[in-house]
Image 1 (cartoon, rainbow, N blue to C red):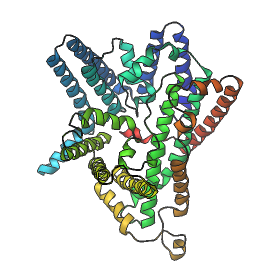
Image 2 (image 1 turned 90 degrees about the horizontal axis):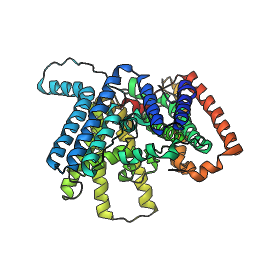
Image 3 (image 1 turned 60 degrees about the vertical axis):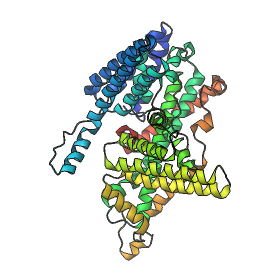
Image 4 (image 1 turned 180 degrees about the vertical axis):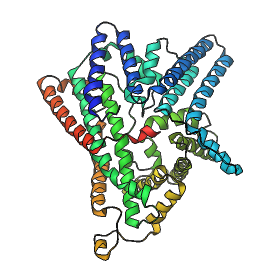
Length: 490
């Protein structure tokens, strides 16, 4: 069930909100159980066949968390360590089988020159997110001696529908206190209005900007990558750069807004990354919960920057390679991760040479080089093969220069309308670079002052206007053909 459909907005969401707040008047635990079951219903709408896998993963991780907690309380650190290892092997084995079995099988067969018939294993939707969420929980149980005693709380923690399919990756300490907070279970018109505004901003980004610029991507990456002009290659690459940006930003805003309606604050996962002035800054803004997970549970345990420059570079590259592989079982994702590993190493080297000096020239050049580097890496991220990516990058650098309006007079066929594509890119760029994001416009965290202003008659008018805009945007989406969010594939 997609966020950008009438079914979700005017059927699932009202029932979920109504049931949650009505049952909260009877029992907080009952409302949590209801929201857990609603989240399961949201998940099985996609494919009921994977419900046993999701429930099995939740059950195993819950009991391993209890196991770790008991051993830590008894000061049996070695047994707790083995319990954690058991949990990691279970989760990574599950993820490895469904996501990487065919990839590693094909790669090994290619290496030894053997034939390989893929098993074509279907990837369960959301498995990367609910697996990483539970890995973080088990590690936190081991390090911080925490564990969740209420089964319904843990089940909701993993399956909570605003985050289940495409993040953010959640942490126990951020979510569990909110589930049990009485204020989260009290309906508020102001809270509903704030959440709806976040949702509408995200819906606009998805339906108008991301889906609007998307039409210029496939002709370049899927059809004509071997015969592109410079302009066509750059248009396609920039179109994808902004499609992915607004698609992921849209999901993040909509998920944040949906959760806010229930009185539960999700961690911020996207914060205007194309305004970043360095790759380091970019990764503090793009998919924030993933980069935080990789830092806390991979980079720092590997030694971080504590063991010298060479070891730091190795740790950075290892982290980014695995971060690339997390996105998909393909060598193009591995190369994407490697590029960002190289970027980060160069960024740290430049910081070592220049220190923290900043001026307009350094800041501007930093932003420009960062953006270009990100665009180049997105080519591999989107391409279906290494050859496709290299062909597009070749066209971007040394391709022929055609694609001008006069081409039609010369009998040159174009794969897209360059002029229209350029307008879309300019609009998207202006929005990404100069317009405040949703958090800048509405705020972040518990926005009590904003909620107070959006209660009563004024709040009702704002909410009504937001719902009208929602209907219009959903009508456009349905007419055009509803598209999934790109991060559903990861």
